[in-house]
Length: 250
Ligand code: PEP
Image 1 (cartoon, rainbow, N blue to C red):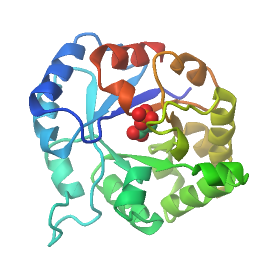
Image 2 (image 1 turned 90 degrees about the vertical axis):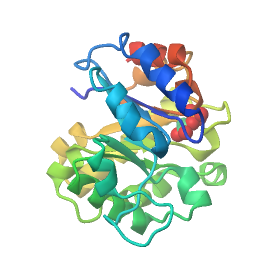
Image 3 (image 1 turned 60 degrees about the vertical axis):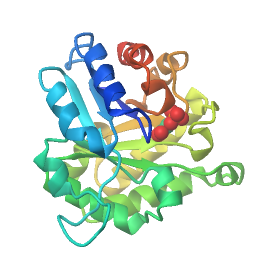
């Protein structure tokens, strides 16, 4: 049985005060960690404080990106070593916004996955197609190539601890959600890619989230599908009530 994982991606939203208020508002109301992994991926500036504020609760704190080098002359970047030094548990890698606006390549994502694992940070590896690719019928090819590139060089045991997020780009922040059937179909195709690369046990163990306009109204149907093990959520993770509703649905 795969434990669901609901991860909020706050992107570049919330002031410091608002971020602390959010964590304070939810931490006593979280469902048990036996049932669901609750993660919030916050702006880097707030990570050490949020880790401390959430330290007595079941909430895990994640980053939204990182470099693959441990240190160096990379102005403005944050390293895996630095994230680990403030006890960050998760990192989103290869989000479509990072791929599009910051030229994050499949090759860099592969190196970042290795760096995250080296520091015991769980990578949430994003993949997904554009609207043009969906309309051309090449969705599964696109996500398969992104996932193969991200996983290149890893052992089956390492892959079992990773999280993959299928996020159709046309559904992110647009209010358009893939139907639960379509999302499940692509998540199932990703699981097959993992099985082909490794084995059936690894494919059965790896958690695959759906992301793209997930909200309290559609989460239950998405999570009822065989291959969808949780959600990566932008807009609906910003308000404590809606984030808690998503967790409760899991
Ligand atoms: C995201 O940021 O990964 C995302 C899926 O955003 P939203 O839920 O707002 O579509």
